[in-house]
Image (cartoon, rainbow, N blue to C red; front, side):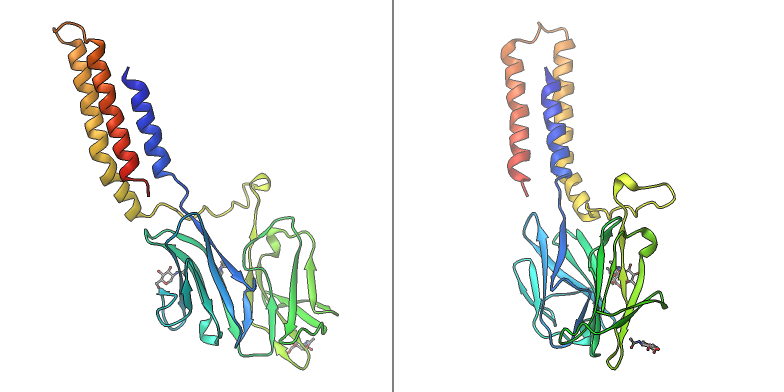
Length: 270
Ligand SMILES: *[C@@H]1O[C@H](CO)[C@@H](O)[C@H](O)[C@H]1NC(C)=O
Ligand SMILES: *[C@@H]1O[C@H](CO)[C@@H](O)[C@H](O)[C@H]1NC(C)=O
Ligand SMILES: *[C@@H]1O[C@H](CO)[C@@H](O)[C@H](O)[C@H]1NC(C)=O
């Protein structure tokens, strides 16, 4: 009689603990390099409110949008006037300490940028790297990977048609008469179906922070203990010398289980 209730409690616990709690940071414009005096929108696309944009720069680590930089809005942030000092790594963070993907951003005072995807490119997909001056120019550009010259593209755009893991690296470009762009990391994601043992994808970052885990444990322990007590009590009674447990008693116990479940549901629906 107790097993369906226990099962329900277990399922509830699992579903609460493992509820997706993640966000991804997206940029507008979606490029890893920007000129100075541009506007940049950073938003946390999330399944629940309460995420803030944070960053590490060479000057200061772990600062939050609104501290000394950026204008925060609900789960997003705008930098209206980019400066070279805005270069750094950006991410979204929840109140519980869960973090999103990170994005490297470089703001240059120079005259050339390399526009490349900020998010990892899927293996097999096509990617276009655009080498450009502040006013879109379509001038010929030289492309480099990890410091080595690849080729010249007459329109300033280099397309890789079928991206593979070996295309991952640090890219930059230059345009004659204007100069060189900063370098940006192009990340390649291996899709699960094409994963081979020689190129394992990095494990996903843990979404359940230690604080959140502790919170779950503290919350659920009393319920788990009381449930176990109820179960053992019921076992003792049915095994004891007293007359067999009547249906009314079992019904009463069942109601108690339901109360426990109701409590869990109402108090911890965060
Ligand atoms: C930001 O800086 C902190 C403190 O130095 C470091 O622990 C953290 O890993 C950095 N975060 C990223 C995404 O680089
Ligand atoms: C950011 O840049 C560093 C150094 O170039 C690189 O190791 C890291 O993988 C980059 N992170 C992302 C998310 O591209
Ligand atoms: C890029 O820089 C290299 C080295 O400074 C130079 O030889 C080359 O001509 C430049 N390419 C373009 C397209 O400006």
